[in-house]
Image (cartoon, rainbow, N blue to C red; front, side, top):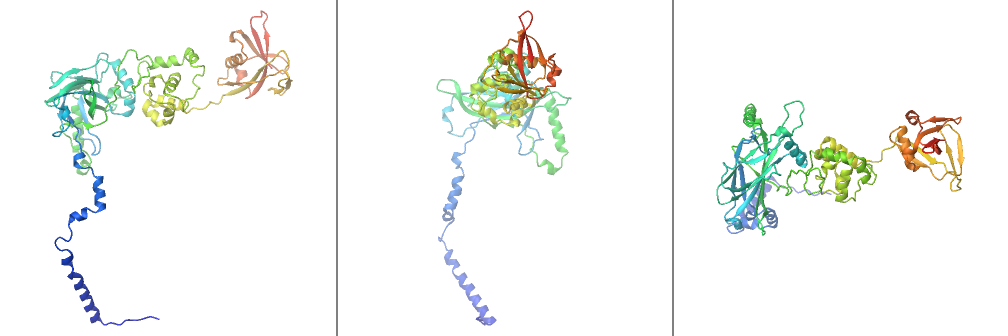
Length: 506
């Protein structure tokens, strides 16, 4: 059953007009002055929560210093990339040391000297890991030269500038924050000196100029870190940076306006951006680099790596390491000291400083790509294979047992020889498995002498007993044609003089 309400159009229209007027009649009263304000809305919990996530203005800190390199940035750098600055080899460039503190900020630094260390380092991570190796190679090719120098006559406001002979890529000085200070630096290494030579026209590697500033501690030494900043550079031969800057500018002029919007404009100066402080253990060149030193320096050696590697693969070194050779795998529970010994024993002495803080589990967690990036393709793959290696399957497995002159009821074995004959003996104690990686008679004789406790010099000849009882001299070709898991009973016969032995494989 359905109810139908019939109303004419006039009634409906008059009702709608009445409702609309009634709804409008209270608007003025509800929104009257003082009804509510925007502060009440902002006081709602949802807005309070959003405000709490925003850092208050008082908590935002400006860096206490600002360093400005007076050299133009490249125009061929995309918007979200770091700036790149081209420098000429050996040319003096000004770095302005500016006090960037707000009023009343860090008052303990007033009327005090601070120490800054400026250094040129690698931008690429792989080269950072092998910095010692790279810089030692540069020193070998450029004896007596430095990678970085301070142009003292042109510098302003610096005190006690120092360059250590053992740190070719760093220099330090003191300066007063209340006085105008500018240090002029010269970079003597060029970017292409650290690029592998191939066919000419190699792309140079980028460097970084980094400045770390310290204040005096309680002991009077400048060890309390205040600020660090760096910028990316490339160094060319004299006049090369000017030509590169001009080339980049010409390339950008040929681009369309839409493409130009994707690149940064070129600035007259380069502002160093904040970064992490450089490790305390900086690159140090030492004449005793040939000694494997497990210091905390995250660097590797260069010129002595071949010497260390050759020593670690010598028979004496293998004997010292317990006779395990390179087959011993690194345990995940190995300590840092054990990991260092493993690296030396497995011919990775040049990377002991690099992995000076790595335990066995730390090394085993590194992926193949990590090791290639750190150690380069050749050593990285070799180290990865050594860390992840499993027992290599031998090319041939032979079971041998030395014949005993007296019978023993301890073990009775039936041995099947290659020719199909069966031999039973009650005098066999145990068979030894010989794993041959080299299918030669010399390798087999050496393994037999080891398991049978016979001096290798006493073995004159080794024969194999043929099907008719004849003795066949053991040769490389015979060993090569042995079937896997062959069994031999070894009998010993003294020679006519009684000084040596002849071995017979039955």
